[in-house]
Length: 520
Image 1: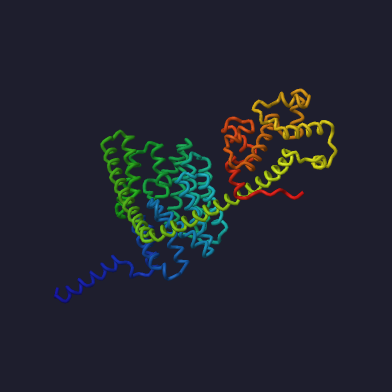
Image 2: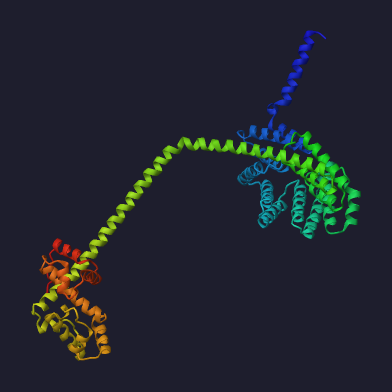
C-alpha cells in the first residue's frame, strides 16, 4: 500500500471516528432516531445521551412538537435508569410545555410519571388519583398510539397494586392491559406485540402465583414467557414468580442476563446494577451460598458509595454555585434589609411614643377637668358657701326622705371634716344616720356606688386634693396625716386608686396648668 493510500485510509478512519464520537453534527431528529434505536435494544444509558444532545441542540430553535417528544423520551429513560433526581425535572418540563402547547397526550404522560413518583415517595392515595387522571386523559385523546400507552399505564398500575398486596385489583389492571394490547395489535409491528404480550403474561403469572394458583401460573410461564424475557418493566414481577416457585437457578440466569445488558450499556455503576446485585445476593442467601451472597452485597456497597459520592459532588457543585451567586448580592441586599428594618423600627417606635404621649395627655386632661370641677364644688362646701338652692339643683328629681338624710349627713361630714380622724369608720356612720350596718351598706352603695371603706377613702382623697392645691408647701406625709391616713405609703396608694395618678403627679399637673372653676 502506497503512502498516499495509507494517508487516505487514516483520514477516512478519523472522519468516521469523529462522526461517531460527536453526534452533534446530526440533526435533532436523527439524534432522536438513534436514541430510539438504542432504547429499543435496552441500551438506555446510551439512548439518553442522544436524546439529551438532541434536546440541547433544539432548545433555542423552537419546534415544540419535537421538544415534547424528546422530553417524553428523556423522562422515561431517566425513569428506566432510576435517576430519581433528573426524572422529576424532565417530567415537570414536559408538563409545563404540554400545558403551553395544549397537548393532552404529553400532559397525560407527564401526569402519569408524576403519579409514579408520588407512589415511590409514599403518597399512595394521591399517586393513584394522579395516575387514573392521566389514564382518563389518554382515553379521551385521538392519539394513534393510544392503546400502546394505555397498556403501559395498566401494566404499571398492576405492578403498583401488586406491591400493595391488592392482587385482585392488580388482576383487573392486568385484564385491562390485555384488552389494550389486543386493540393496539394492528397498529404495531411484531416485535412490539411480542413485548406487549410478554408484559401481560409475566404480570399474570406473578399474580396467579401470589394468589396460590400455581398450576395456571406455571402453564402460562412455560407456554408464553420462558427465560428469554428481558423487558425491565416486568423484571421485578418475573423475579417474584421465581421466588414464589423457588426457581433460584432461573432467577440467577435472568439476573446475569440483565447485568450483561446493563454492563454493555456502560451503566455498571448505576442504580439498576445496584438493584440487580442486591436481588442476586438475596437469592444466593436463600440458597445458602454465603460466599456468593457476600460478594454480591459487597459489590452493592461499593456501587452505593460511588452513587452517594457522585450525588454529593453534584449537590456540592450546585450549592457552591448558589452560594457564589448569593455572595455577589448579599452585601447589597443585607444593607437594604438592615436600612429598611431600622427605618421601620424607628417609625414604629415614633408612632408608639406619639400614641402614648397623646393617650397620657388626654388622660391627664380628663382627670384634671374632673378634679377641678370636684375641687370647686368641695371648696364651696368646705368653706360653708353652699346654699340650699345649690344643693337642690344637684338633682332634677325630688329626693326621698332617705336621700335627703344621706345628703345632709354627707355635707356635715365634709363641713366638719369628720373623716380626718384615723378611726372614723362604719360605727360612726351608723351613729350619724341612725341605721344598722346592713341598711348603712345599702344606702352607701345606692347613693355613691361604692362600699363604706370606699366612701370614707373618697372623702379623704377629695380633701387631700384640696390641700395639695391650697398648700403646695405641705409634704405628702403631712397631707396624708391631715386626711386621717398616718401611713404615707397607704395614702399614696389610696390617692392613685381614686384619681389614677400619684399625689406628686397631681401636684405637677396643678403647677403646669392652674385650674379654673367651671362656669355656673
